[in-house]
Amino acid sequence: MRSLVRLLRSLGVIALFLAVASGLAAVTWHVMPEGSRHLLRDPMDYFFDTRDQVIAADGTTAGILTLPAWTGTDRGRFFGATESIWQSRRAKLAGVRWSRVVFYWSEIQPGSPREWRAPFYLPDRMIKKERDSGIEVVGLLMNTPIWAQSDSRRGTRSVPTGLDRPIDDPQNLWATFVRRMAAEYRGRVDTWIIWNEPDIRADGPNAQYFTWGGDAADYARLLRVAYLAARLGNPSARVVFGATTYWADANDNRPLFLERTLTALTGDPDAERYRYYFDSVALNLYTSPDDLGRVATVYRSVLGRFGLTTPLWLTETNATPYDDPVKGLGRESNGLRVTLEQQAAYVVQAFAMGLASGYERMAFHSTMDRSTEDEVWGLVRNDGTLRPAFVAYQTAARYIAGGRARFVGRERPDWRWPAGGYVPNWQMYLVGVEREGGELVSVIWNGDGEVREVTLPARSEQATLVDKYGRSQPLMREGSRWRFSLPGATAHSPLDPDGYFFIGGDPLLLVERGVTGEPLAVLEPPALLG
Image (cartoon, rainbow, N blue to C red):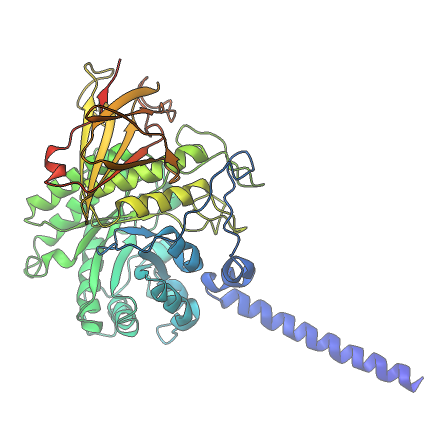
């Protein structure tokens, strides 16, 4: 009997211990930053990610194999991807050279200005892993904690209180936070983007992405404080104007958020001295490679009216798929979502057009799915398998990184839709990329829905042709020209005019070595046969 009593007492103690431990775990989970929660949810994704297997739309590899890690030079770090910190090895394999990582103020100091959870929010070892992989980390600062909100109805979207106080005043809560972040991460994170998509409105069509509860004048104050505070914390810090979407304003015929912010700053006597408080301007553009050059021209025009020649960064781009075969990842086709094959074509076309359009940096969003409640964004799924776009990214990085680029297109003889709108009339696309060592890479794709036979002038005897997955393709020479077939385009939206495809057909890359002279100066579009 005594033995039974002792056993029951022991079981009671164990039960009490487990109850207390469970309670503490629940509390810890509740206050833990989301990034740490995700790390604990799916540790296999991060520590055992050695299965570099592509899964295509039919559930097989479809003959798509990852390429060896690219070890070439991308001095300007043009090729980037968001949140690669969760998949550093995969990012390095892809060719990523910089990554945007979100730092939520509301999670670093959730309860008071005395809290500081940055070391737990993103452990230093993870930043070190990125840097050891040759990837520069760029921080994105956003989301106001409850104790710093000037309008609690806006929640984390609220304008921070105290923005008009001096930069060194502790009551300027945003300044204090930014200065500390810049100082503590100095040498590891030296570039800071200030908020994301502040142009999206609460009553707009993309309201699910609404992040900023103030107006452009409020953002001007936020940006000014961030710039000055970051430089106090780290004199080498660079500040990036928060990425805007362009379409949020263009669709409502409003002046761009960038223009409205610059206008608000014109009354600031120090604005010109500090180049309007930013070193780069970020954009987020999706779905159509045609938009990249056109929108860059619009933004440069706005900057030029204020005497600025600030570099542009494309901090998010993608064309999200609907036909993913993995359970739970398929989506409805809505006219803007694409197939996995079209997404892979987009990756090559977009990075080629981005380079030719003069963006200083460009990032695919995202390295990994993580949340799949909305779209499926990642090059890598949460189960560790790769989408075909991963290998397309490898191909783009391998063949065009580090080069100077120029776009030339062949227009159709007649317009199929009214001229002067958002939809161009290109029938054939070519981005020429000149790289060191006499290498010329011509990225070519078809704007028509039919297969086209084309030719290009041969500029070298040493040439290879590869597809969007880096696989060698047959290349025929006819006299002084190369001849090949360009697949027809298939990505058409009901919102677009008949005959227009917002992503071109599968691109091909003609790689010529030993090219002399100035090949970009004499670049010409593909010639049509027949």
